[in-house]
Image (cartoon, rainbow, N blue to C red; front, top):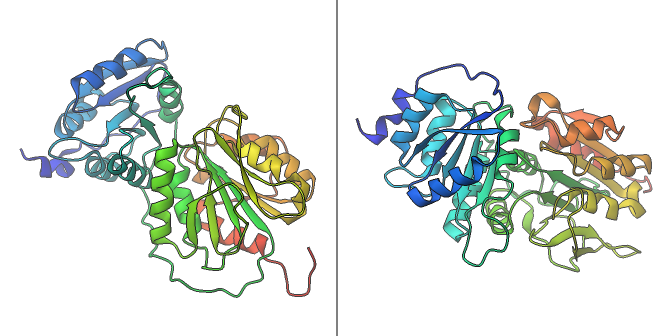
Length: 362
């Protein structure tokens, strides 16, 4: 049987809700890397490694035999790449997948493409001289991913033409997301015209992947998309992404409409943090539209509630369209949500909220 026949032999089976411990399949062409991942995961009683696979064909067989709750998938594999395998897997047997990638340009680009195709998270492989323990936090990610709502990825609409809308956008859009939000951000921004509202996005992702994500978006949507730089002005037609690493993306205090990259500890458990970005905009709440998307945890929920209390318009992704209904759920519990919006309608909802009728003051 050839590898190309993989898409014909996935056995259709209903995926049951995962029960503890989370049954995990490790897919990587390196025996050493598989062993390292297994060692890390088996320290956690919430995880049970049910199988390992070296190739896409072995992975397919392991999926059919063991029915894992979640899979770690290497980006670069022989015969068939992780991206190709993911595409076939999601079409025939959608399941939670966490990509594992080297921090190379090619690896990061492929990993981001995988996230856009339905993978839930991307975890970096350890590097020489790395200070943190290898795969720190991977067990937490897999436990959360195992209960995610995974479906066959919907087709993405064609590239938005490079058009000027002429709409009277006066508010600034702030967006925050985590697990599953890469595909959501892409869908949202495909609705944005070339003269979109000034937009800041904080997405939980390692810095090298964020760079690849910004480059990918800049090639497929109308506005300019790039990583934020310290001191950047908030301008129409520009979407700035938090660059990650050890910096939070904030709005400067005072009269200037500029951003700052603030080095500091985690806020709400993350760097970059959605809460940090939201809190930094409290001084101009009446000029803000804040959106919170799919993601585990609660980062952004408290900041959104504060923004709403001070006059901002706040939107949250609806539960039925979330991969992980964590961050939006907590925002709702804290009375931080004006409107619940399905992912397909999120882009236009943001634009409408950012628009001010001609003659109105803000």
